[in-house]
Image (cartoon, helix red, strand yellow):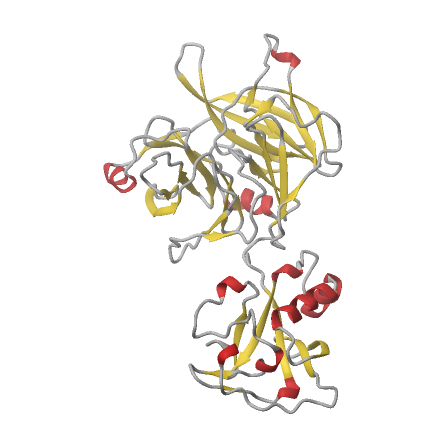
Length: 446
């Protein structure tokens, strides 16, 4: 209904100042602030003034939220027939002709609004209210990411390249990770997935004793990618969706207890989130409310301090580092490195692991590798000083598709990579980093 052409606006009794008193309240009825406004004041502008004029400390004290509070995530409601109706601040969302058009809705038409296609009535004009709530989008994030993964994820898998199968490791029975199983997908699984073989273009990550795989699609005639999982407990394969957004050269990271963040990819700035639901299979995804500054190819991903996700990418000439606070759902922050000439580094497409207050780059490719491997060490980014340095860890080439190292307890992290032996045959190795001893170990498994 277009309020500008409505013929049934009721007569309103304004106060002597010809203003209306509007209060912002919490959902439990606690007054945050009350202010007088002209009746013709636009509601969207009133809400934006509220956000600009009240600092986060004040707001989070009213809403009883912790340090990760972000006022950009506040949700505003009006009350209609006793039911809370969300006020969309984004004008593009108000396109339904049956809804109030908030882009030109004024204070005089707020109240407890009752509307139909032809009528508009007002409740008590002197008691106008907007209700405020904090939207914690990712409600199932645990307090300690690494402890949760180390205690709850005992099965770890890696797809076998050029086959339809995977290597499976059981942390409970193989503490040294020197034993493994090779499991092939069944003919039924192959029909479900419609895949020839796993390749370097299949992005995957381990989560909750499942292997989640997001297909890289290079078919110009197909606008979608497939997203599926393999339950490592019962070896059952399940196609989650064949219509996920088309992705190429992206990465994934598991944030416990139940989120997979899909970040990067050719020609996209959007970040997707898949929420694992063990009772009822979730076949859809959500979009992170903010977008990346630019497309990032095969980024390395790591969680830091149980709230930040760091994104590191240097597919071209320079190293890009971004971070965002997953708990407060913050925009992406680009990190400016503190030391000169640190953008152009030789190590590319590396895995990442936490090393005290730094992010250590392991494996990948060293583009100017000379004959003496001992002359090359891995790079390391100190996230407290925002400086990039050479570490004491020697560089060893490893092709990591899942670039996030998996915590297995006591500051020990592992990841697996296939490699080509001197005889030309394919081998598999475990790369382990001990954060206490600051030592890396490469163990050939096959």
